[in-house]
Each structure stands twice: as C-alpha cells, then as structure tokens.
Amino acid sequence: SDSELQHAKAEVKSEILSQLAITKDSNDFLARNMSSFYGKDYQQELINAINDIKPDELQQLAKIYLTQPTLMGIEGNKEALAQNKDLFLAQGDVVTLKEDKV
Image 1 (cartoon, rainbow, N blue to C red):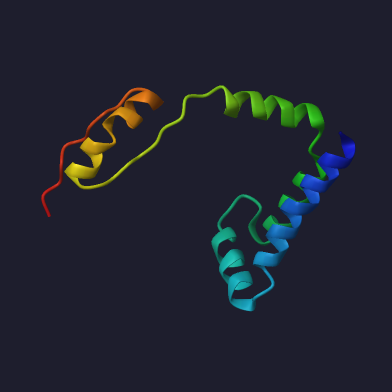
Image 2 (image 1 turned 30 degrees about the horizontal axis):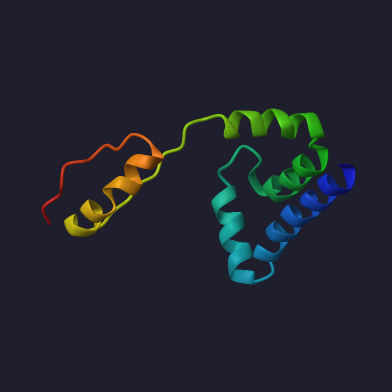
C-alpha cells in the first residue's frame, strides 16, 4: 500500500541520517563518497532517489532479488562441518573449498 511504501522510505532515510548524526561517521561517509559519481551531493541524491521510488519499481526489483539463487559461505572446523552436513545438503548444492594452511 502507499502508506507502507511511505513508511519504508522514511525508515531507510532515517537510517541514513542517523548514521550521519555523529561527526566522525558523517566525515567518513562524505570522504567515502567524494569519489563517487555524485561527489559531495551523494547524500542528497540518495535521499532524492529514495523519494522517487515507485511501487512498480520496487516490485520489479523484488522479483529480481527473490528469484535469484542464494549463496552462503560457512566456515568451521572439520568436525562441526561434518556434523551439519545433512543440514547443509538440505539447503542445496554444497561446494567444499580447499583448506588453507596458515
């Protein structure tokens, strides 16, 4: 519904703005984004983009993300991995990577 969309937009914007409430975090955010396409205006452009999102665009995005296969990385000792092998196999294909020797 429109009210849900407006609520979700407000939450995302609130999260962005709360990250900038502390001067250090704000400085870090600005420094990271100075080299982006939007430069110093990145924060405002991000807020503008959130404001401009339409329901059909969100539905299109959701279809893309919710229909893609997922990828999980699990790390642990051999015993723990072996003990949970059936659980992992129930989730889909399992690929074991070569063990690194540190």
